[in-house]
Image (cartoon, rainbow, N blue to C red; front, side):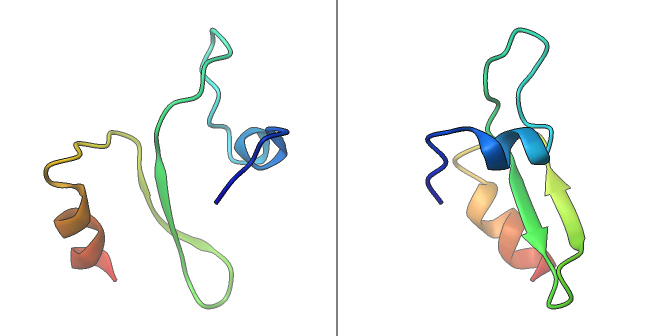
Length: 54
């Protein structure tokens, strides 16, 4: 998802104390609630981690 204005990032609390964005993944359930948050993303393992909670 693209978020050039930062509205979504701010809504989910992604910017850190320095105003920089941190890579995070949110798994959102069918009812719209956040089921899982991956706050640390390791590119070599991330796909498998996400698939394991789907």
